[in-house]
Length: 67
Image (tube, rainbow, N blue to C red; front, top):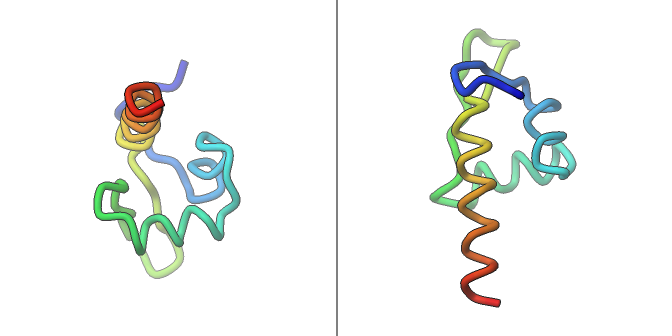
């Protein structure tokens, strides 16, 4: 199991969500509730793994409630 205090690079975050990196960046730019990326340096951006997993789980609950 992935610990919630870890960080994921964009490719890892996209794999956790089952989406492409392009979709990850589009969601980060357009969805107000999507977890924000954190720039560690000019060439290193990460997402908080716990936030990504919590967001994914919240989306699943929303779909079940609406469906």
